[in-house]
Amino acid sequence: MIHYPHLKKEATIGVTAPSSGVEPELHDMFKLACQRMELKGFKVVCGDTVWTQNKAKSAPAKKRADEWNEMMQNSDIDIIIPPWGGELLIEMLEYVDFDNLKGKWVLGYSDTSALLLAITLKTGIATAHGTNLVDLRGEYSDDTTAMWQSVLSTKAGESVLQLSSASYQKKWRHDNPSPCVFHLTEPTYWKTTSSDDVTIEGRLLGGCIDVIRHLIGTPYGDVQSFRKNFINNESVIWYLENCELSTTDLRRSLMQMKLAGWFENCSGIMFGRSPANHPVGGYTAMDVYEELSEELQLPVVYDIDCGHVPPQLTFINGAYAEVEVAKGKGTVLQHFR
Image 1 (cartoon, rainbow, N blue to C red):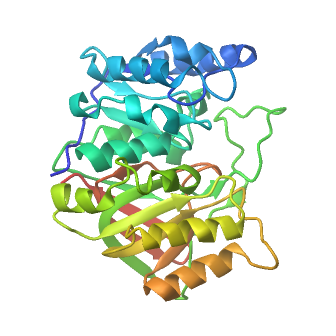
Image 2: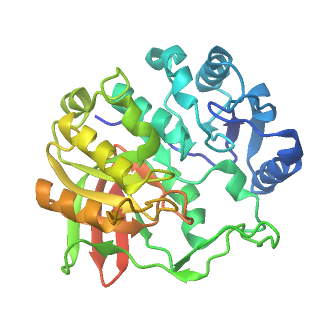
């Protein structure tokens, strides 16, 4: 059984940095995000790691893990949202006390997704792949991003529906701040490797492929045990997003997932819009998607609202989802069962 945390009103948000902290010159920007959350009725408690950054990490791995464990076990903290991702979260996984995690939401993406997936695979506690805290610093959130609160407020046994965004952000424009943080200028269009409409059902698992691929073969990436222990071998929908990989590196990573058995009993694969996917020798992302679909005989959906090209839906690792894609629009109905 999957355990679903529940976000209550006026919850206390614990902010810790299991990957990158916030450089001094960006402290004011991050403090603004905390203030916005407090205006929404939340209480915000920040750990020491949030305010430091040195050599591509907020702090040594053990210190990051100790602060993380403390917040996870602190009954006064209801949800944990890191400031953002980073590069070296994987260093702290061996120090995480997975045996004593309390059932509370953890929300984030990018490097954080390695921790999210590890938690769900090892414990059966659902985790939330969605917005980072720093992206909630706007005067308001766009409709897609704002759904994080509704999704995490869904109770066990209930369901929640999300729609594909109307538009997405092509590039960051930090010189021209937007009231909702993002500059949503491009029409969103979910695509498939076939010309047909697509319907997929299964348990959601996924994250940033750049980092979750490194869980393969470790105690934190045991998909087979998760299937047996928590979802009764139900089918899985993988949602993946590529932050920095070339198309050949993406292909190698997907092949490793395939050879490790991650795609066994899979009902479909979804890919987020990507700022990377750089072609190599004429080999494109479209080639990758089509080859994967053909090899696995599975529907592949791409350019969905997930990852480093905002906005993004809130995907719950472990939730049972019904995904429909038709005429460029997508719906994701997640059941907390």
